[in-house]
Length: 273
Image (cartoon, rainbow, N blue to C red; front, side):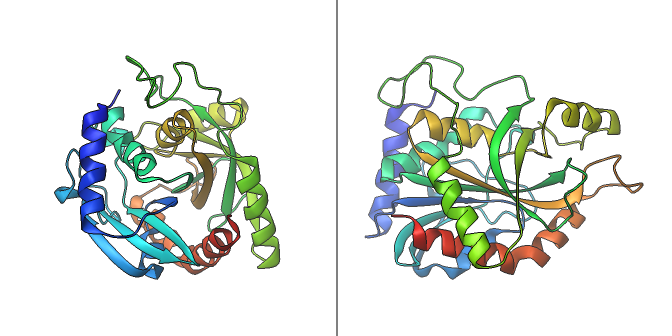
């Protein structure tokens, strides 16, 4: 469990850099960070300057906070995230979520680039996350609980907020953007899944698989934040097509769907009260 003092130190540092007081947070996945470029009157803060923040080495992650205005809302975007597969502890992976909560963020949009397990989906589709499956065998909430941060045994029956999902579904329909819905499975990585593992994941009921999102979503739920999850399906998972997987493909497809993703998220932000 993160130390409250460390969270407050990071919060105070960020507050010292901007007069913006964000209420909506965004965690932007591989190749999706350009949404932060849409933020008006931005204040950019490198992770390396923020007390107790880690630094991701993952390709496609810029490692900075961007704070400003978007669609009439005060927002804060994580342009890059930390991954368990990089060797970070889950406390390090989810520490920024605690800081966002301390800053006043109540609604958190978590995005990712991931593989499609559902064979009716296609690369380039966007998927609204309805639920998740934790396949990693650990949990970011393990350890002593600080009741100031959240309850010992949080309810996770509605991790992905129904109200925000309704807003996203309506926005996609109005913009004529196809929006799949499904269950996201968290895989530790960094190796992609084997064909046999993908068959297992499909049998378990997941529609997509990726290496992020679930730790942040669990900690956000523990902190009583409203979570909206959107995945960019960049490839068919291993074994579905007779071709190898590589991260360049992930970034390439994320780049192609970027404009659609930005349009959808901006509409969603405009509808959040």
